[in-house]
Length: 256
Image (cartoon, rainbow, N blue to C red; front, side):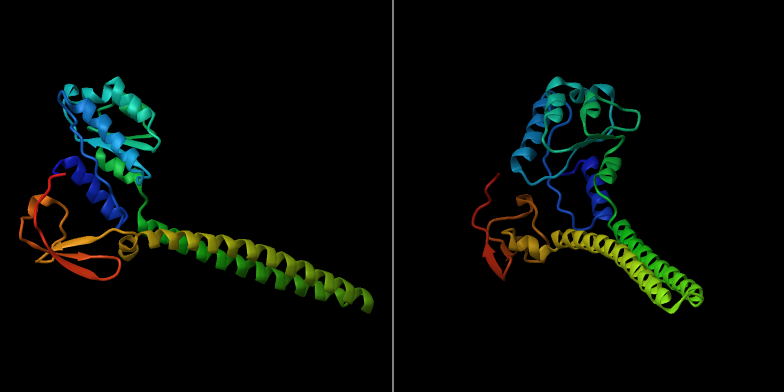
């Protein structure tokens, strides 16, 4: 794909969330065939079943160039799409009916990509902040409990021995239980957040992707082969599987 909008989206997604798997469903976005092409592209993504989010985008243009995004068939396809749809059509001044029915409307393709995924570095920073806050909270509660116990001990010295022992035991038990409850809750939240980050990072592991049945194809010079347009019969390829690698030779180029 050579469209500028696609290049902006791909670059933004890679910068914000490296390793994210992106599926491309091409469509004509102006001309007589644009309406059917856009509707078919949306349908392909739904039938594929892998996408969790759909970005419908194109670069800016004259009002007549964007007319297809006001067509009823395109608007219905977006409204009935089972996958959340973000539009990034044209420039900031442009707005279409497609923008109005989308789950979120961004002013540009780049803004649509920014809305689609968080910055991975931000997720890490938030996790670190939660860990720091948890430690500070536990420390504050512990210090407050120690001060309170010291105060209680000072007061209990003036009570009878049996009252002193009974009240001190109750105070310690109460503070201990409170500390356990707060610490347990904060630790549980921290563990859940860590698990979520772990699951997200696991999905980015290229080896995990290969073990699910995908393969990485490289040419003889090590370049990743992403299109048949750069390959020729007789050329040797190296295919990396979930376990091991194989070398193959192209017999025939079959157009998709």
